[in-house]
Length: 119
Image: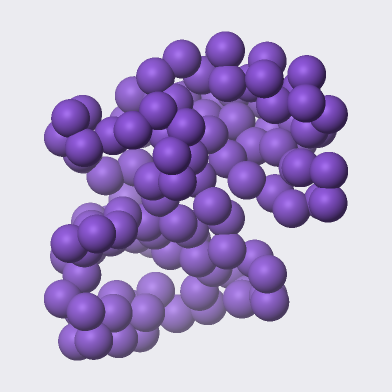
């Protein structure tokens, strides 16, 4: 995730949106030109963006309808994971580390996949 001011982060609020793109350069150019988003590359397969009211990223891959990954922020990732499981959600990627923090991914009762991250 991008380096964010912790005061902006709200517990269990949607905070990050992740897209797939088969051409990251094209995606960066489009969103920079349209909305002024600023990009930070994390290797050839991922670029993060920051805008006035949204943060997110583009991972290299074939875009698929419905493939945007909604990511929530948590101050206590284990407590949030427990709440997801207790509510009937299914963990599809257990907690893992990445540059900038940790996250897990789950599906809700309708099968939608979301993620939760922490610093």
